[in-house]
Image 1 (cartoon, rainbow, N blue to C red):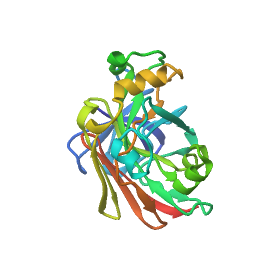
Image 2 (cartoon, rainbow, N blue to C red; image 1 turned 120 degrees about the horizontal axis):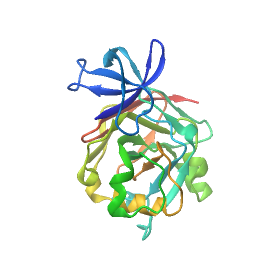
Image 3 (cartoon, helix red, strand yellow; image 1 turned 60 degrees about the horizontal axis):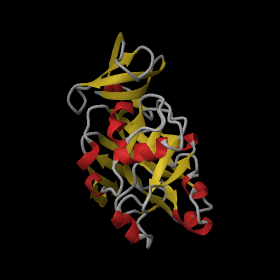
Length: 257
C-alpha cells in the first residue's frame, strides 16, 4: 500500500494511492491517520489533480552518517564501527516539488539521496529481528547538507539543520523489502549517485535496534539510512531527483534562501 498526504480542495488529508503509476492513479481519503488498517471516508480524487505533501510530519528525524563505505571513502572518513547518528529538526521536512532553499551563508550545499524508514508505533529497545513489527513503511529522502559548514563545525547540526533540508516523499510504501534496493540521484537529469541498500554498513534492523536503544521512537518518526557515493553540490535553479526502487521518485527544485 502507498500512503500519502495531500492538499485537496477542502484541506489536507492522508490517502491511499491506488492504481498503476501515472495519471490513472486515485487517492482514497483515510479517515484519521495512516497507522494501522486504514478506514476510508469514501471520498477520492485523481492523484494528478492533487498536490503531494511530505507523507508524514515526524516529531524527529534521526539520520545515519557514513553508512555506505564508498561514501565514507569519498569524503576521507573512516567507516564507523557503530552507527553514527545525528538529528535533523522536524522543520527541515518538505514534500515533493517544494523548493530546497540554499542559505547564502554556505558555499556548498550537497544532495544526499537515501532510503527513509517511517516508524509505525511507539517503541524502544527493539531488537533487529523485530524491527519490521514497528515499521510502517519506507519513503525517499534527500539529506541536504551544507558541506562546508559541516566540516567547519566538526558536527552536523548546523550543516544538516536548515529549513527545507529534508525533502521526503512522494509517499510511504508499506510492502517493501529494504535489503537490496537501488538508490539513484539525478541533478538536472544527470545521474550522480547510483547505489544499492545491499551495500549499507548497518541494515535497517540494526539501525532500528541502535536508535531505539537510545531514543523512544514515535509513530511517524523517520530514520534516514545513509547515502551512497556520488554526493555533490547544487546551485540555485537546479532540480534534484532521488529515486528508490520499489517506492518512486522525489523531485525538488533549488532556490536561494
